[in-house]
Length: 519
Image (cartoon, rainbow, N blue to C red; front, top):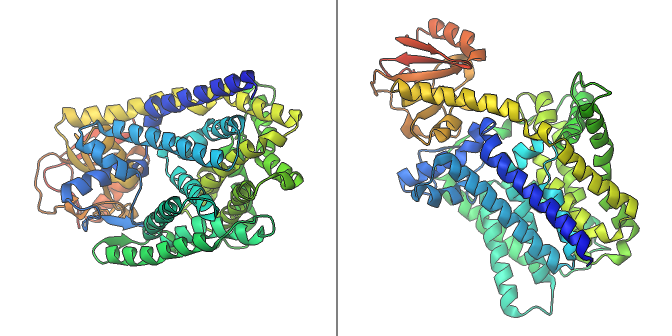
């Protein structure tokens, strides 16, 4: 390939990696949530209990965490790394692994270096605050993307008759192991993200994907059967809280609004949503409008050129592109018509993370068909990346993050200075403080419903709630927006009264001379 484009794309990729590292190390602390902190918390519980599936732990949504972030966090905790540093190392190292697997697969199916660099750039660009937070901050659904790419890599080997028998056995073994772990974790998610995503495109595009399926189907089915047995062997000694099983269809009255909000969520993921009261004739206004116009190019160009040049694509190139689009529309369609969150309309716009694996697949589709793009399309794609750099300050949200980091540090310092190391808080204000304090403070979740001060049963451990525990420094941490209802409920339910109250910028700390939880 021409040296100049290679150097140019490499510089863009290195710049992207720098921004990812900077975001994860210095910005994401402000947005680090209790959900994101669970990997650290569960890893520590596994170490304390000496069991990979602690029977004291409350799993939720049908998810039995099998191979996930906590798996990598366990050895780092044992080695004594700082708690938030563990999160950073896990996220960055797994992203590096994702790029490595992507490289192996794209190289295997014949993508050139230029196309691979384009794929990497598409994946690693920080398009928006939501993209940065969900893909690289919380780093949850990128694991599904990596699993899909791994499947494709092994499927490719299994479909090649000329491959050595040893390689076929190794590929089959990894398909089985991967399937056992992913199925055991959550059969419902597995059905959507892997069975539907991997095999519906094969069915719909069978006339264009001329590959041998026998060995693929054999090893995949064997993995499912073993995964069923493995899951039910685990379920016998763990606790499971219902969550996503309560998902309902959106009513027809609200459906148009929910669908529209979901589309806005997709625009928001790519950084095109300008929100309210953004000046038209301003730098930000122009940047948002350009992003809104350009993201459909990046999103649909691979599909258009794949259809136009399908005879020039090999079966696995078509298969990969097909997975990206068909699986995206399956998951996005489900998201549009169901209530996966309590506040569905808000989440449809602000938290559309379920589509991330297939958005990343579409990003690598750009790399696969880059060789067919016209100069105009190539220019628009590169310009959209550079536009993300121009608006990087909006994505990083440095002022907002610095203020939030200061508020969180204020809470930690106030608790330590007052000798408060064991207490409670609503779920979304609990686990992340434990991690950010490097486990010097243990803040355990309370059930949010009715403020009855009940022990949490959502990604928590029974071992944390000793009702007989008596200490003059037990506490409950309450965010300002929940103070009135908390104090009202405390009187209504005749709960233990606080002996002291500390008022901070964003929180109140209520101190007790005995364990303040009720049950």
